[in-house]
Length: 246
Image 1 (tube, rainbow, N blue to C red):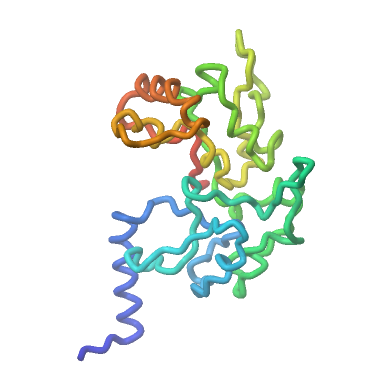
Image 2 (cartoon, rainbow, N blue to C red):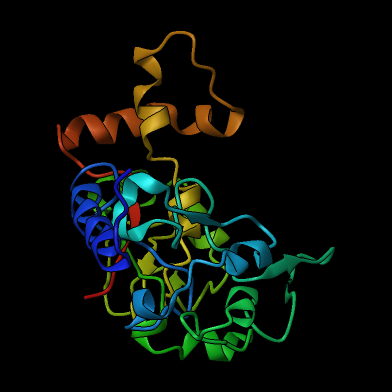
């Protein structure tokens, strides 16, 4: 039986990590809010951030990810970060606690504690944000068809992070909203990414006869196929995506 020293074991994980990042693991890892620059050095893979998340937004890499094994990440296409907010009967968003719960649960400071107020979230330093949303106007239904607007209406920081119209543009003939990401205030929660109907499922539904679309999806289906068809192969979906900040 061959025993690996701790040093060789960690080295093996490190090498596997490169293989994982190049293969099954996404190149741009979206961490939970408050991830520090030295996150990987601080994170002890305890899983407490995931246990604290009330919406199961936080996932953990499996062994195939190598050096990233058991570290937390967020996949907005599966479940966005809801910023620990709950919707009241009056339609308002209220925080579930004084701080974002994942950072409050982190025992090492790999995720910093962030006070859960709108003012704090809007002024959060870029290095602690999850990412930033990028909008492709060429395949955005609001920009192309005066339709949709799901990203704007569902943004938890609406009218600050996501605007209904570009602040310094005049667009002739515009009658509906024209979503615009304010990079200064966007925290990369992925809600816009999650609700955007210009997605793979709707785009590929015609190729899979057995796939059923919901009423929400069906109402946008024809427009989605048209904009994606015009854009051609290789276009990245959805129309608004969360990417890591440089």
